[in-house]
Image (cartoon, rainbow, N blue to C red; front, side, top):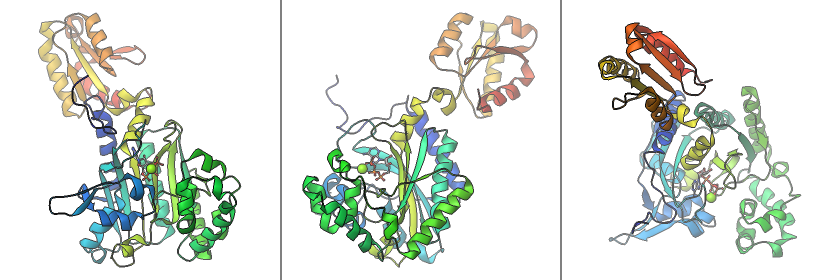
Length: 424
Ligand code: ATP
Ligand code: MG
């Protein structure tokens, strides 16, 4: 064990893992641009007050999880625990509302929370998120949810499910809270200290408590949706209708609230059955009050964020992940005389945008194939004297060990179609 290790709850992203990160980041960027979103980058630290006001001071994040410090000028600063409050701060600071009716922004970067580290839960983790500011229409909520689903489809993540709920607005929230209190109050003495403290001021928070004892007392809870005002009910029905219309499967979960105070109306979560205890991959919802709360003009907004580490975990669980994330072509010249021509083919494949390993230090086919296996290559191109004599290349698919002789000048075309074939 080396003398110095990365601090508890942090980890290095090693070159072995990096292809997953690049794959997730680049797929997200291209997908967001299809929806006409633009990237924004904000500082890694902000004034502590931004999070206290934005996220809410009776949330787990603000009460227990923030990395807060004073700098040498005695400013109270906090490493950002999430991305929405900083983006809203930037939105207001740069007067983005006056530049266009709707601002569609996305971000990617590290977040910091002092949590108990475990699989899928770190103290420094990374999120990719989107925020659409300026529209109160339910189509906007549906578009944001659909974009998340589209992204995870595009990434090839399987076993996902979408849960959706509405937590109401300032008009009906007091009614919802009163009904919850009537129910929860019956068992208050059995609930944890946090729940007791939050009972009066933030009873909705209790639904999000991770304590297993508290959870057992939540069965039979009144359905939040019965207490929604007309406008919130209509809004929710529209969102649900739009999702149905796109054929996106989802479940309504009347207990789904999120760990941050700023949500209004729609909340949603995308979970995976492959993540174990930390099964949430993506969380989001509408936050119509946050912009004005942070000093901007009243501006409705909706967004989501997902954890890159958790997306990587799902990809790694999938058996064909190596080839899917970043397929490798292994080129095996058998004999020194075949190196130059192999090099030409390698150059063509790389220029077409694919990853190639050219191995020139091995002369035996058997050792080449062993090495290709070790590197998890999807295709091996064998070019020996026999192939050279007929001006062909032997293309071997490593998944099923089948192979085919292809004329040298058609090899590139053939290889590209093999690599683009998702059903291999
Ligand atoms: P959880 O219920 O797992 O604590 P959360 O409700 O706190 O999640 P959000 O604040 O909504 O999560 O963040 C959205 C996503 O960011 C989560 O679904 C998860 O993928 C990821 N995430 C949140 N906290 C962590 C963490 N400590 N380590 C790794 N990923 C995290
Ligand atoms: Mg959390």
